[in-house]
View 1 (spheres, rainbow, N blue to C red):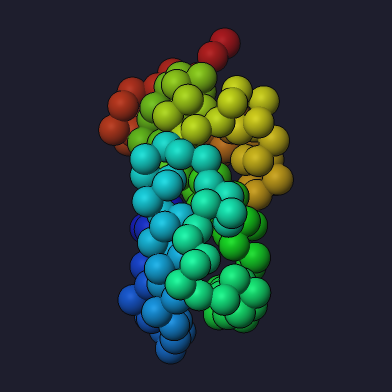
View 2 (cartoon, one colour):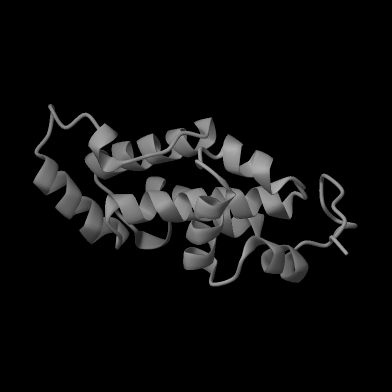
Length: 140
């Protein structure tokens, strides 16, 4: 499962499986990924559009990636949360804080929208407490 999450970003960036991405799209992918790794909230308005045509860059991104920039960022953020859950990180409040959410409710809303289950259901279905990097016990 972790490989799936990692591969999504790298498939676009490294042009795997016949995917071709332009330099401008790769820059946007990098900026989104950097924000996620830093636990920052990301919005397309944060990009430096001075050196390029914003409308063209957004159209290129949509065409090459298949999602609008904001939707892609939201998806990547949810995937980073899922990765933390798979590793067995226990405190959802800490995950929310580290990933730049205002609170757990916003995290749960985004996560449920992307995965169509909440974080507790996700843990129950996909996290094996014996295999997790950090041990996690389901709440009674």
